Length: 106
Image (cartoon, rainbow, N blue to C red):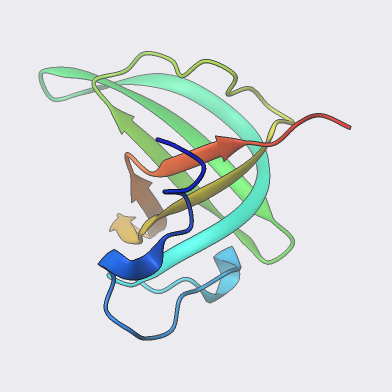
């Protein structure tokens, strides 16, 4: 993914795009920035899934990367901006295979 593609919302219909996790709504687009709180590889069906918890000051959500045991650079404390369509995994808001950008450390 190139930086020019990130944040390009032309593929979504016009409408509200949530910019904070706390205002995210299932089946609606989200572009949010937060810190990774935790990471783990989980067995999901016949394959693996790398799961992160991303949090901002308004809430948290799962980032799920199907078919992956890890994603380079993703570790607790890393600041990340993500883009995708919000889903639900049980009661938890989720982004499946989101576009992402790891932010430089201070």
